[in-house]
Image (cartoon, rainbow, N blue to C red; front, side, top):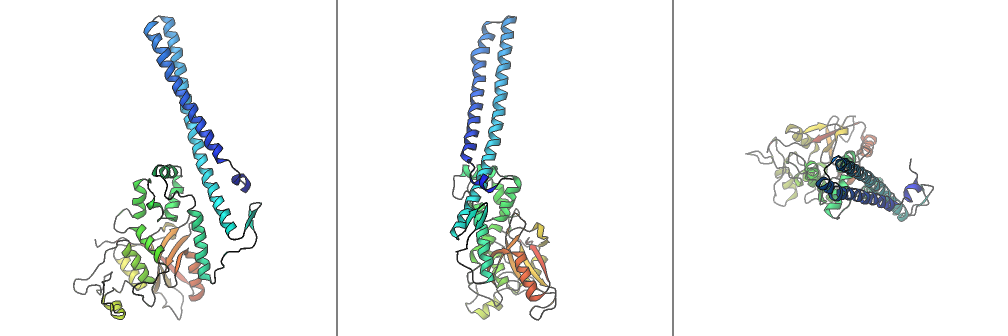
Length: 373
C-alpha cells in the first residue's frame, strides 16, 4: 500500500525522465542496427563473397538483430514507465486537489489525516448539506480531466486509462467528457445514446443546469415537469393524439399555450408531462424498460412508488420522478430533481428520507426508448 507521504512526495517527473531515457536508448539501439547493416554487412556482401565473408556477415546480421530486439524491449519498458508516470501523476494530482480543498476549509493534513476545525460556510439544512457534499465530491472527480487541453494530450490521457476507469468516468461525469476534443468518436456516441433518439448528455446537462431554477410554468408538484423538460432538452419528440393533441390518452409533450398558467397546465400539457404516475406509465408503454440499480446510468429516470400506507401519498402509486445524472465509481446513483431541488445527490440518501417520512418505498428506474419515431 502507498502511504500518504509516499504519494505526496513522489517525483513523478523522474519517472517521466526515466521513460524518456529508455526511449532514447531504444532509438540509439535501432540506429546502431541500421548502421551495422548499411556500413558493415552490405559492404561485406558486396566485396567479400567467400565463406569467411559470409560468416562475418552473418555475425554482423545477428548483432544487428539483437540490437533491434533490444530496442523493441526498451520501447516496451518505456511504455510501462509512461503508464506508471500517468497513473502516479493522476493519483498525486487528485491528492493535491484534496489537500487544497481541505486547506480552503481550515483543515490540515497530519500523518495522512485531515485535522483542524472546519471553517467553510456551514450549510443551513439537510438539503444544502447533501448538495454541498455532492459538489465537493465532483470537484475531486473532475480534478484530473484535462479540460480545455490540446486534443493530442486528451487522447493520450484517455488511452492511458484502463477500460474500467474509462467506463467509471463516463458514468460519473457524462457532461464534461463529450466536450473534450480528442476523445474517440465512440465515446460520445455511447454517452449520448447509441440509438440516437434521445441525447442523454443534453438531458443530463439540462437537469444539472436547471436544478435550482424556476420553470416558466411551475406545477404544484414540479418533479415530473422538471423531468419531462429534461427529456425534451434531450430531444425526445412529442407524441400527440390526432384529435386531442396533448390531451389524448397516450400522449406526451406540450404546446406553447396562451400564457395563462391555469389554462396552459390543463389544455397545453399532456397528463404525462407533469404527473409522475402518468410519465412512468407513458414511458413503459412506449418502449421504455425498467433496469436494475446496478445497471443504472445517466439519462435514466427514477420513480418512487409508495408501498406503505401513508396519509400524504396513495398506497401503491408512483408519485415522484427524478433524473439520474451520475453513477459514481463506487456504484452510487446520483439524482437531480425539483420539489425539493437537489443536484447530484445520492439516491440512497433520498430514499432514506422518503422512507422515514412516508414509510416503505419502491424505486423504479426506467430507461426511455421512444418507439413512436
